[in-house]
Image (cartoon, rainbow, N blue to C red):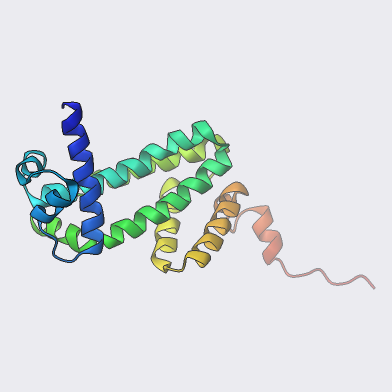
Length: 193
C-alpha cells in the first residue's frame, strides 16, 4: 500500500474504534467524515461494516500482543509482565466497549476471535519465559479476564499485584502434594511438657 493509503487505513481504524465504543449506531459515512476521507476510501479498505469492526478488534489485539516483546526489550522481565497485564486490562475494557459492534460481526458469520487465543498465549508465554515462572499462560489469562470483568480500577491494580506475587513466587506450582502446602495444612504439634 502507498503511504497515504496506510495512513488513511490507520486513521479510519482509530476513528472507528472511538466511534464504535462511544456511539450506538454510528454510520460508516460519519466515520469517514470524522477521519477526513471520502466514503469511497473507507469502502476501498473495508468493504463492509463488519470488515471495519473486525479490523478495529484485530488492531487492538495486535497492539497488545506486539507490546510483549517490545516491553521485554525496554524493561526488566517483572516490569514488562506487570505493564503488559495493565495493558491487557485496558484492552479488555476496549473489547467490552466494542461488544455490540462485535456481536453484529459474529451474527454476520465472522469469528473475530478465531486467532486471538493463540496470539495471546504466545505473548504471555514470551513474558513468562524470562521469569522462569511455572505459571501456565492460559491460567494467567483466565485470571486477567476475571480481573478485567471487575470494573473497579483500584481493585484491579491490587488484584494484578496479587497475581504478580503469585507468578513470581511460584504459587501455581504448589498443590496439596507439595511439602510447603502440607506444612500449612498439618495440625500443630502438641506443645512439649
